[in-house]
Image (cartoon, rainbow, N blue to C red; front, side, top):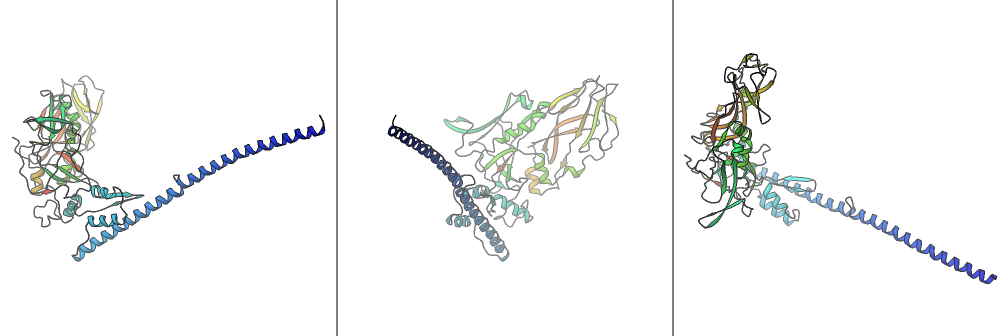
Length: 467
């Protein structure tokens, strides 16, 4: 090969090499550009990106402005109260905030329905003078809790006042439907089965909420523990589908399931508009009305049945059953009857257990949580008549108790009976079972922002006759 040919071959190799280097450089450049683009996009739009941070900052600024406007409104209302002037309404304030685009989307609706709104990191609470919560708090603050001699009914709501609550929610999916006189009617339903209430004479006890032929009056019970919601209950026990309005509970099964059954029945009344749900009335509800504190009242002091007295129970060589080590110092002793042949039965962790007459080893711990009291004189006449002076309308409380006294131990479900907080012994430690029937009073929790425009305050109503 001559020199000219050799030089041509070298030139070709150099050109191929340069072309190869150019393609690799191009690919690398593209990759670098893609990486840089990804970083740039993340910097702009990522969770901590510039645009995201700017949007968060805008939201926080808007939230701060709403919070400041609310504080100024509170100050304006306080000044108006002191000087006898007037302050703008919540509706006027919300109109202004919307006009300034400080409230967007459903934020105004959130305030009107719940009394609060969350904007960014801020949750801002608004007090609406027409909100039922505000009106009840004002009545209590003004010493007008029961409202018998209230002179400010325009701004007050009282315990025992009637309100217009409809337990059937508009536009809701109804559990069942029934044809009445050729017309389909809506209905909510709960069936308490005998396997849950213990009353085997009836296979089931059916409660319904319907929008026809039923008169249910609703009254104000009070505030929730956090004081953010209104509680309402029925003026009388609610009726079953059958003529008999009372829920029958029997024996150990009734005792074990009482709270669940009462709450399940009550829940069907908590589906209406402006409601957050419903449960049964409890002993804590009526204690709050009467200001009865079982921790300080010392019911049964120095007796075996003293409230919260705890003792050890076991069998002995004679087939009898004794108590000992009572926490209140009550002397050791022996239960005086009904256990020798049947053993000592008790309920623990919602299960029936028994110490046989021949068993001298098993020891159990029983705590007496029973108490009773008459509310007469403890509450105003209006509250007494609405919640305690029920005549023949006894009603269950979704609260259980154990009563230990020298004869035996009772496993009770609490109730209100002829002015008293009472308890009905459904199961007795000798193995015996009892049957009782009382009414059911649901307690509905209303949404915190509900106003008297949503649920009207009514004049006194006439309660239906149940017997």
